[in-house]
Image 1 (cartoon, rainbow, N blue to C red):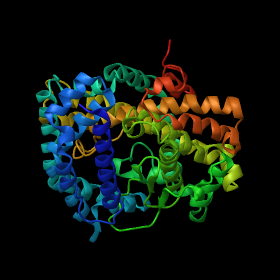
Image 2 (image 1 turned 180 degrees about the vertical axis):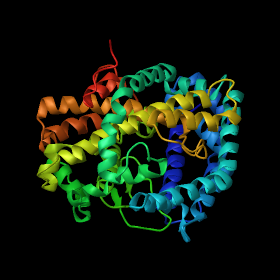
Image 3 (image 1 turned 135 degrees about the vertical axis):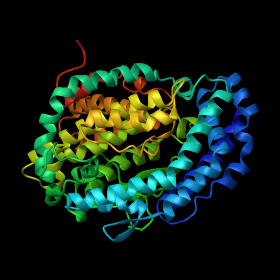
Image 4 (image 1 turned 90 degrees about the horizontal axis):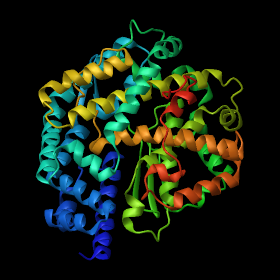
Length: 483
């Protein structure tokens, strides 16, 4: 196999897919037209290509080929799922709204009954309109993993990623146990402040409003959203206006996905940051998170092989994203960039939100280990999903999202590893450059040096240290999982 020729076509394919993803999920195209792209590049992910890449020892290109083969085999259902979701509307309290916009309205509603009505309508639409396709995709991906020689989808993902997912699951189980007693005492006051209710009345439908945190809106004015990012990057010696390949898409569109994302169409020369503003702190967190991805991709050395610019351990790019996101709850950043004098309400809410997210993703990983393991019984998984997520968060959790809440190829593991990486990296930046490290050009240069190398090496090698999940408990002032 001619690897140089192969990786050149890999870049063409990846750019075309990411461009299509950007146009559809930013609400600029109704259709998600990926079928023709897959057909045009079908030779990249044939069974023969997978076997030759196994022999070549290029683990990054093998990872790409296997995932792309699964994408090729499921492209019709994937495209139909995106089209159906984009066109789907729901009705709640006599009002019709786009499915994708519903969660934004849910988060902005002060009325718990209206939030519950929207959530119920979204769950019903998910169950009837989306789950049949999601289940077909799930079962086909599992069958393909076995056809390619792995005993399970879980085993395939462990082999391709090099991550011991079961060991990570043991770490996150330990986190759940260690944070169990602190969870309700830490969350309850913030639920009361933001929503006016406690755990006795809390429903899953209320969580978007909790994260939205309207009580904090005064500190997070919409007219400071984009300027605060530009000022922060300038403090690190990065002029975002002088990055011609970076596009910030903050325009509101009815069919725009509510989930912010970064689309690295050509790395490092054409990167899109997409956000659907909802108002308040959540917008700042989403913008800064995606800016972490954007700046990482925009600074990768363009001379690196394609697989080292586009692929690898996404725990790394997620770690940079969380590093930037954390700024919007940093006392020094809040004072210097938003002029906030009383930062305590914001830091209290951020601490509670982070614990909730960490417990949610820890339970999600445990669920996905069971969902994707050998001998899994799909019919039993909706109830198991509800049991694990509801138990971790102490709230009745609907079964309807048992598949729509699952990201492909154990991406939840990347998030969990990224939180640990971010915590360690942030600690080193503070130690070396001070609490206001984000105003030090030297800190920016340090980050640019890390960004240039892409993510071909595992996250553990970025800092020359093991990822230590126990740092998350210490960061939340909850102790440690270590004896």
